Length: 368
Ligand code: PEP
Ligand code: MN
Image: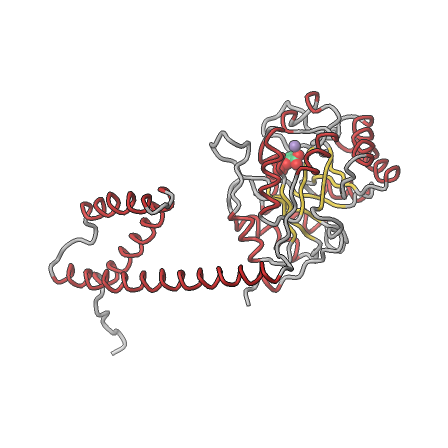
């Protein structure tokens, strides 16, 4: 069994609803704004957790950097008056200490902090022996290992009440503020089957009219929860104004989302699925066998090139492969980019096989 798969997470704090909902403003701005947002949320689509940023990691200085410690009593009020657990972002040991002092229920580590192993380690150390759930956002850049590293740092200091949040990755794409890369959280789920994964469609989309679609996509990929920025007057928000929605819009969003089950109890569905899956199993075996057959022939060509002192890369041949295979694949209904990527992978592997053959030589045995 993989090392990761052995990790056990304590999930009792998160298993209260489908999907687990975290809502609240990007930033705590004033006491009234925090309390009024919480009141409207509780009266409408009561989330499981109320969020508000107290210290805001801004890319550039001189923009609103959060109200700081003075906002913590406001969150304490949310907890006391509405019985709603609260969560804030922490980026260092001082934040952790203050959050614990005011009884914050759950912490989260932001994308700009997950990129820094020093900062994550500092937070993890400051939480040694403290029983509090921590949600870890993915790093700004699509680096799987950094995300896993942050999770491991918390596990290593004895905290297993963890969850991950996918909030997209920086990219030049203009479609999203932070482009989602669904393969990365899916890999995380595969490597840590016990870990709950939440999607933050607000920071992915960057625009309120895209929040619904991203949230639906996440639910279709079996994410366990959603973190949605909610503000009583989004256009006046002091940070992330364009992506926040009102508590009323949150009700609409939640009621329109389709929550699909990751399995169906119907035996007809199960039988049909089994049948289709066995067809896929057969096709996969055929694909792999064909690739192995291809590799053998590639090897034979390699030996032939070696005997005739010919270079491995024959550009013309490679061009011909691309020129014929791509339209052929497209004609068969495959996506052009997919065919290109697949051919590239196959070609890289062929070059590797032939390089090994061409450079095969008997290494003199120095022992004798
Ligand atoms: C936030 O949740 O307000 C925030 C700053 O998010 P991220 O770390 O994903 O940018
Ligand atoms: Mn925000």
